[in-house]
Length: 214
Image: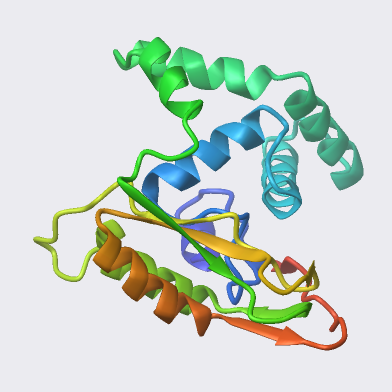
């Protein structure tokens, strides 16, 4: 992809990230949107913030706004800290005719799905794995993704408050929350989602988020 972009005279870079664990703590259409706005308000998860800042920094380098990656990261982080990206986001919504007041009211709700169930830890320990593939399959089966090209998407379905590798949990701690259209779907999702998590007695090294920049 990088070679193709550059051959077409488009200055192209790629950031290769770890895809084994979900990015951030939310997965699913609306839940990811809500978390993205949190990030724009400097309240998002650390790994999401890191990737946003790094992506912006590389764009600043590519567009010759600054020469060093360290300076570009500082510029991007400062911009995020001062709230300018959220202001620009609001301007974009208004320009497209969105009801900004309704959107902001929706953001204040903890959930918009009819049913929310918690998946709790069966024991104390450290999260050694949170399988992104299984999380994605759970959301797809809840209606949050396409099984076929004609699938009707449930934008409210998803998983949030995802506990990440390296974090300590107690017995009955919440590993994640399932957002579903009904209780039957939610209970089936809890059973499947359990298999995404592995808990160890000791903390394992956590994979770095960004593996390579091409």
